[in-house]
Image 1 (cartoon, rainbow, N blue to C red):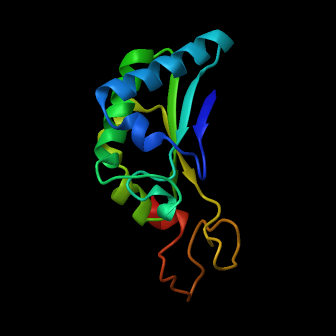
Image 2 (cartoon, rainbow, N blue to C red):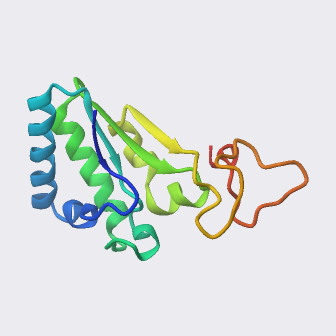
Length: 147
C-alpha cells in the first residue's frame, strides 16, 4: 500500500482543491502504485477543514474536496486496487471534517485511528474502546461512541 499523509503532512488541502490538482495527485499516486506493484493507496489526511488545529493549511471546502478526491481516485484506479483512509476516532472528527456517507462507496476500508485519544495536553490510556464506567469525558472520546 502507498500510504500518504499523517500528522503534520502538508499539501492535502491544495492537492484536493480543484479538479486539476486532484488529477495531478491521482496520476502521481497511480504511477507509484504501478511502478512498485502496490495493492492500493491509504490516505491519512489529518484533518480536512481543521488542518490539525492550525498545523497545516486547510479551508472550509476541504470536506467536499476530499469527497471529490476519493470519488475521482476510485474511478481512476477501479476496483482492482484498494482505496482506504484513516480517520480520527473522536466522535466529532468524522462528521465534522469527513462526509462518511458520501465517501464510503469509494472506499474499501475506513481505518479508525483509535490511538492518541488523550492529545498532547493531557495523559490517559493510548486507546479507549469504551468510556470508563462512571466517567464522562468532556471530549466524548471513545471508539464505541464514534462507531
